[in-house]
Structure formats: structure tokens, C-alpha cells
Amino acid sequence: MSCVVGALGRFRCACSATLTGMPKTLRALVRGFWALDRRIGGNRPPTRFERFAGRHPLAPAVAIGLLFLALIAAPPGTQTVDVEVGIVGGALLGLTYYLTAIYERARQRRLIRQGVWEPAPPS
Image 1 (cartoon, rainbow, N blue to C red):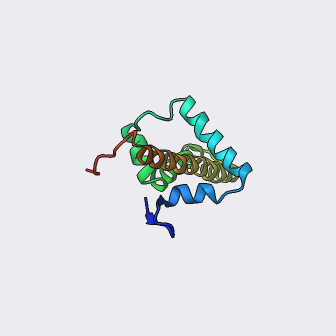
Image 2: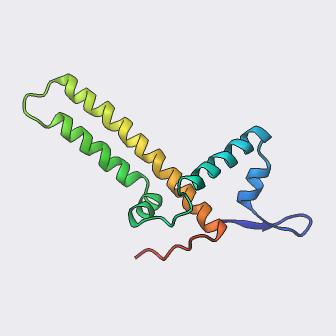
């Protein structure tokens, strides 16, 4: 989290500066999203796998995409269409997981910023 001292000597974090620079509608959507997240348990400290996914969002996404491709394309007697479906399905599944991991990273940053959770150093 990068914090700066503003022109009037106020100490502000970059996260609050980006939220105040947004249009009102977008700001309301962001606040509503985080309110919904808190409502469904978003203030819980992350589990071990959630911490890993937040730190390395691409690794699990690629692994899940390749696993899906292997499950679809590996059985004997597969057609060319099966391989194409495996590639497209694996890419979409990997993208979905990647976006979920990016959300998890943002959630962890919010928990740190609010003082709800303090991460342990990676081991």
C-alpha cells in the first residue's frame, strides 16, 4: 500500500485517492460490492489456499485449465473436436479462476487496509 502526504499535509493512501476520484455511480457500485462481500463472510481471514491464490493467481489458473484439457483430450478415441473443446473450455475455466484469484487478492488487500487481518510472512 503506497501512502503519500498531500498538498495540505494530509496523509492519504493511494486506495482512498482512487475511490474519491471515481464517478459517484462507480463509487456506489464499488461500495455496494464490498458491502455484499462483507455480508457473505468476506471479513474472515483467508485460508491457506486463498492466501496462495492471492499471491500467485496465474499458477492455479493454468493448472486448472491444463487439467481440464487433459481430462477432455486424453481418453482414447478422442476426436479433433474434443481437443478443441478441451482447449476452449480449459482457457475459459482458467480465465474464470484467474479473475476469482484477482478478486481474492483485492479482498486480502482490503482486509489488511482495514486492520482485520495481518498476513504472516511467506514461508
